[in-house]
Image (cartoon, rainbow over all chains, first blue to last red; front, side, top):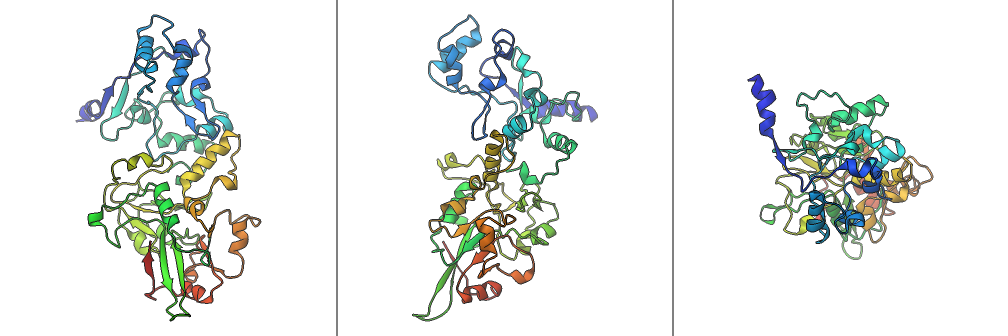
Length: 180
Length: 245
């Protein structure tokens, strides 16, 4: 029974969905091109976080194919030429009732992207996207570790983690500070 | 918040703006009646009972009064699903914690709480106008006015973008206040003695509904008419109210 609970149930609970094509953060944000996170993942002047860049941002460099990479070919042929947005699955998309301001944490709180998101900037391929069959939330919200133990601070993005970090800094917030 | 009842003409704009801003679902027509719809802000029409030319009518926009002292809904909730937000004073409803017992609806002296009898559904196409700053509620939970705190979140994010944690007063205005064509609703920080709302709240002829209950609502009303003020204190059981709009 224990094995079913800890091993089989998570396998049944989550299903994987493919991303439209592979994307290498390493090529873009690594030594080769040296782009910064905020070049694509911007905070707008009104404080809203523009999580995924629009296709026009990709088209600034990839208006036509500039290499031999098959993923770039998909990007150009399927999305840039037809001016369609890429239907990425967002790993970090929070539930509808959660409010999170990147501006508060990054601009006011001086936090770095890596503090919460880990070393995504140096990854060469996109991870498998898993989604909870019942809630529809990405597995990244709970974290890969089903019992909830964490080795790195960026594993899991649930409320416990928000509260833990706020409590460490002496913040005592009411529910509506973070909930819609 | 202070509402000038002498200005309100009962147009119902505030009710509509509130529904749109907060993703309030229209109840299915076939099953809707006077008591089971969701209207965070409801305008009541109250006549003075006199014959012409002495007849007068007042329109009263009624929403959660954000009680500050021994808040009835907070006190009775068995789930801790209602709390008085320490930073803003807003009485916050947490739908995910609510078990739907509706004790709070019974406790509320202002009947400002509403129960979701059905799954949230919008007529085809209308889902495109949903506000991303307000999360829709599910069937089986209670909801109520929260002073459009989604707008407060947006104002906080805007302030943070310029490196500040302080919200500019002009950036946080609830939808009902913004939509009122006669500017009958004044909103702001009651703790700031220099704010317009604070001055109006402490002016003559400003009152609260059912003040004798001692719940210290943060929504106040203003009227130069003495019969309106008398009605506000004795409104329970008068039987004169009629729903309007």
